[in-house]
Image (tube, rainbow, N blue to C red):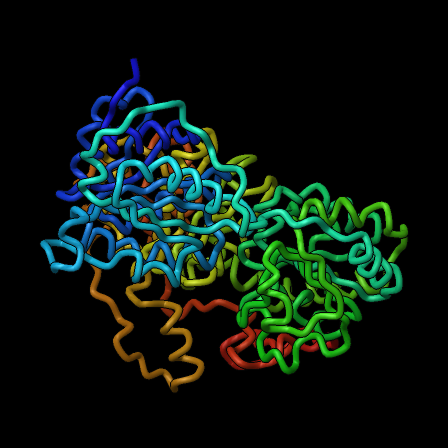
Length: 578
């Protein structure tokens, strides 16, 4: 005898059949049938109740990024659906696989301006890989299967299923769930022509000053070992984008740092001296290229990416490989000649010596024990105290740039940050999701006082689930990154950047979260040790001098080798001896 179940239950069974064991969400009227049936599946599917729908989607992003699995979000209609828009756009730009299920009014009410009716599909189509409205329970298996397949294949991204209330209540006959593994019009894993591999291999073999730029696509495809093998065989220095951090170990001799506005001097400066740039799984964002008219003028450009739409979009290429990064690098390896580029690599090391003398020491050390610690100093010490395999989660701003620069990475999938959209408030819920996705790893979340307050209600989620996130708030009573731009480019006119903040430690106390406050450098080490020794969540409130800035810096719209060293607008030179 066939089994009849509701569409809501069919959706839950399908989610479980897709291998999902955790969803993030917030209930409401139009999604109540789903939540009612979820009550019977708590042994198979853990639901994380966040304090805001934006928190739910950012938590799912953190979970997906650290685990490589598809994050799942369930919210109701109307304002709940619109509250996940920021997370959808963030996930789209940063290629994060999500399936977001929104409740919707019954299909017979669509178009009537019913209570909490919103055109979810119309709103979300431009910022998702696919958006579909389920109006009948008979469509659930088809739609859900496609959603998971689209979200986590090819270039990953978010998918929205708008789930009408009548489809949740309708009964259908249940049969074993069938996953989707083919869509005729969608080719997420294109074959790589050998001719394309040979063309790129010839360029690499002929190069004398090559540089690899490793992006998020390397991490998504699991190409870290292939990246290291190629770099070692051809003796090529490797730099990473912000989202590409941890695709190569920080202490690898060929790893030379991060590119971009606040990247390391060597990779930025040598971008404009290279004769070959090999870009892997990155999109030539303006924060990486600076002025594209003056980007890598001496170099031929090779671009390897799963998304052909990125080719020649921002930077003109000489050769492309359309395909999965790991498969592309593994295909290239046998064609690459062993060689050495000693003088070229030494130029990166020379630049780093100057950077250490002129920038790093100023950012990570200080002689006055009574002074406020530097942001870079805090990030480096937390990283060193966090053990062998920590995960860095950042909010957006100065905290993001300095923690990313001075954290140390030893394993893949060790940084979670909002890159393309730059979403303040991303960090705390993303850190919660990351800790749930990798409970065995120490998750260190850095935030400024501004970004922390955007989603600090998610301390309630930590309270409810006991999520052991280590939270470091770099507190300077300013919107620090905007203040830095106002100081450099707007004659110190601090318009609407000073903040009057609450006592974050008292707030942590209210949520039952252990905490400490550091105002002086002399107290920093002991407070970090206290945080790391504590078995659960911990908030470390660190007072920072508001004048602390992020350097080096390539101002927006300048060439990548136009590099400011400090607030005196000193420019980097390879002959600079300090």
